[in-house]
Length: 318
Image 1: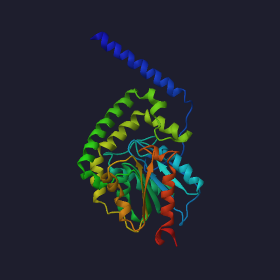
Image 2 (image 1 turned 135 degrees about the vertical axis):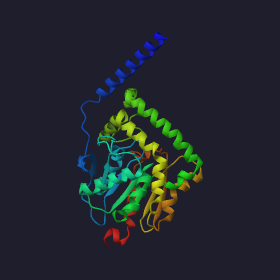
Image 3 (image 1 turned 180 degrees about the vertical axis):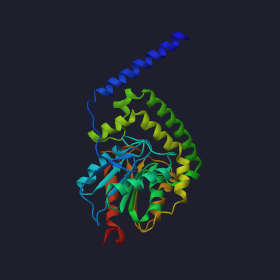
């Protein structure tokens, strides 16, 4: 038994050491963006593109589970080419942002988002863009601060109503377990050898990819992400109590076309179908993550362009 234990320990040491060496080959690294003080804590904010105006408001991006500002790097580049301003950030405890209060649920996250927007100097209203689990955060923020919302682009985004689906509940349970295992693994350093092979599943440009890989092997990032996933049911309940999206807001819903059941797609189409100006796109070939990358990210840009073309007069200044 002792020999077995020593053998396992030796394998782990070699594995982690090899991983550390692989990360070291990436060379010196400095994250992009700036740090915004929100009252004794700082959150990293990455904005790109020209200053916004009434006719072309800023796109404010909220990443999904285990995500950070880097998730949006490809789409931010594409929007900048179109002269559209965008801002993405690391939630508290994720990426390079300071830790935040608990629980890590939608209410706490939205508290921070409100503070960040107020301190950032970025004028609203915004086009909210949310990916995956962030659909809960965009819903709560829009319910709390409707005056700061001009429209929405929801990418593979969950809705509060999906929590009532037994299949969703089962998925959340499994995902929570996997997230906790990932948090332990990253904290022990056993994810280090996966830095190059699994760190960026989105397909990001160079800087964004480096940031995503660094976050992938970060124990702190993974632990906070696991807490957010564990609070998914709580976040869904909080978002479900918020006011529904205003029908006057144009909404683009974008999903990866994976040949899934119609029911799953319909659930995510709810915000688009409830809007007076809604559009839906299923992106063939994209996955839940690659839909944000350089290959498939044009769909998100098309969603933003749709929203811009259908802004309500109070949002566009017309």
